[in-house]
Image (cartoon, rainbow, N blue to C red; front, side, top):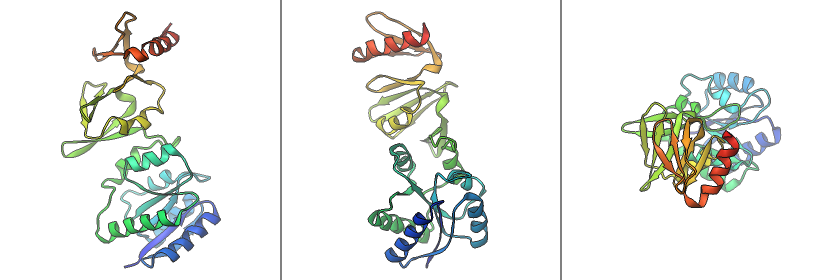
Length: 254
């Protein structure tokens, strides 16, 4: 079985390089077309029905996420093409999405092709619900706007702006939400830090706690610095961070 492949990238040299590397790397893939923008790419996908697309994220006239959102039930796998951006790479790995980094590395591409080939031929998809995965990303600034939490037998998509606090708890991570619900993730606290650090309304008050200042109710300035959020919960600021946090709060709220 040959995997019918499209390459979508606004730069000709990137398309040409990926095409040649695919041909040299694996006989299991056949490049059946290329496109340089999302409008042409959409038409090409409809016309040629590929098994796989290599998709650049940032392109003139629209980004790769916007292209994918045009498909109700996409029947193809996606490998994202991205320039070096630590956040983007962590985001893809966080959601187990495949990507190749510019400039394209032959060894990394070969590993990616093998993974995708095995997934397609075994009829398994790493993306169980394509629309939910796409919904995680803000297509304007490429930030993750929702966090997927595996809860019981389904995945809950938690709006970051609705999170009151994130707390480490014995290898797990506890999310308290503005509607008084609470979710536990089996992922460690550190797995979420690269996401939360991008949101200025969240501050880290001790080694294992972030709080959302949009839900701040009050705080104390005594020997123990306590912060109360609108869910009535109190959170203690570590002694090491007390001066920093109080200075920040006084600057913001006085």
